[in-house]
Length: 451
Image (tube, rainbow, N blue to C red; front, side):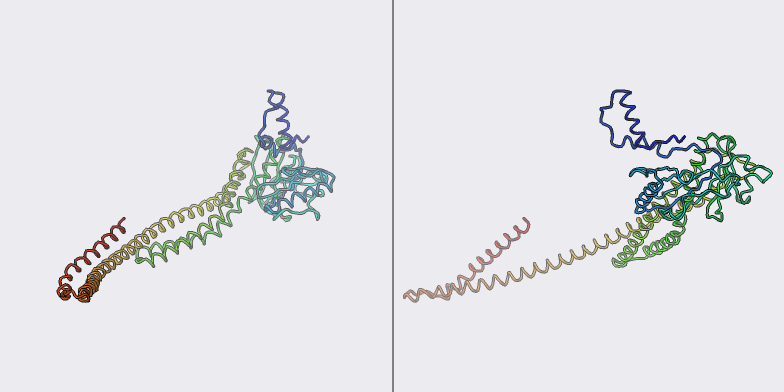
């Protein structure tokens, strides 16, 4: 019996239980309560009996393809007379082609797993029954994981036929005893002629629930270890780019030691800004892929720890084999990220140094400009004072001329006045008055300027 419930069903059960246990049925519930409670049971294990054949495929699914894949699956289910997945459902299971098809949607990939009883009398990895991955199947994205897992009894791999190891290339095979010695797992992690990796699980006394959990975890290990390696090509592609930025950074650092002048420092600062932009673009493009690869690798480690591997007859365990192959890849990813961070720090320090130089040189230029302005102001002041002296003489000349005309006016009425004497006597007072008036006006303007 398949003891499965969807997240919504678990939430409803939780709500009913709450209503009978403490009288809080009328209390307002959090809108995400059912989803949070149901997430624990979102991907349940199945009860699996031996023997059984599993075909497992994983596709990298862009967000734009996820909705199309869900629509295809609903149509596929209708054609086989069963209900399709709900709009929020991430796991769906149906009976088709004499077996069980399980669909699971993850953040960046989708998996399809079909299992059925093997053909009677067929050896491990022998002929299989009809499966749903025929001409009518629509892949949701690019295929990355393709695995066949055969769960067999001990009687199906007797020692006289070579045992479980005989189904693999012995130089590559990894074998472990798991689940307290109740199962043996073997694989060579190589692709067979059908384009699939092969996993053999020998049942040595597994309970159906243990068998279901073990099969799911082994398929998850194969899926996650494959997706974890997607970061390695990205890291290898970025290596030359990072190396070029490092070389250019060293060149700019050397130029900074010898640079002088505002224009040269500005050019170097522009070069640093472009390098920083290039580095940030590269880092942003790889951040998700590197983070996802490390997360997948961590999940693989957790799954391996859960199944409890023990060595078998001197063969390498799965964990030891994968550690030798994937650990260097993860170190490469970490090395690239460390170099990115180190470069970002160096570029930032160099840019700050150049900005300081540019600011100092700009301040020096501004100071020189202000000094020049001060010199021009002093010259203008002296010129103004000279002009003021001339203007006093000119104004006084015109005022004395007016006095001369006024001194001649009494003669028109028969009054004799010596105009020349009056004009001569008026020169000094007029000069003093004009000078005082101009000085007073200048002082008032200077006061307004300071105010």
